[in-house]
Length: 221
Image (cartoon, rainbow, N blue to C red; front, side):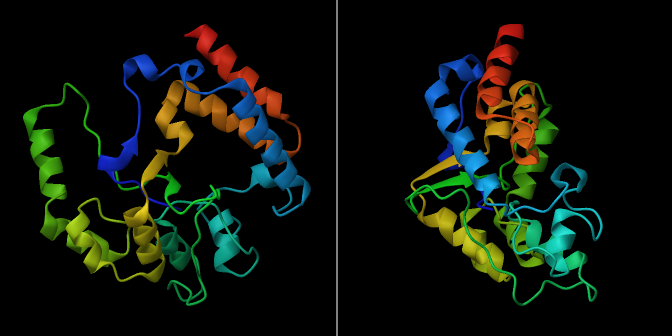
């Protein structure tokens, strides 16, 4: 649940879209084994793949909102989503925030949520619209709404939600921010990556499946 500010975002160009140039097999295998080890501790709800993310009381957000789960891995917008799923439709006072996965250093975080992008051939009016969205006044109103962490650094002072404040503070002190891998790699690789990871947490996948999935996807491009 750490958001990303564009100026510190680590991302690659077109030539960097093939994950074979950036992700090494030993690293992916190690992280896959770590994910499987986490699952073996049984921290997750039963029938994991059957639960929607943020729609309804039986979603992962709904389970947290109504006291049936202790935590959820989600983006900085999640406090508002959880608030909308409680009986009184307000953000619970007990709701907290922590960065995940742990990297061993507060200076290195992973996440995403406050970046803006425009297609390379978009008309000038699209750029004008994004410029309007990113001006300080609009960003302060966005921050005060509790919808997310603002992109404009000067608007952070308008954040009222404590969970968003914690996320923004973590971002402000980070030296390095890695965008979520499914977003960073793009849909061609991100979709298969997510599906392979879900099978690990669902109990039917193995770490080497993640590696094989990315290699097969790259070979098919």
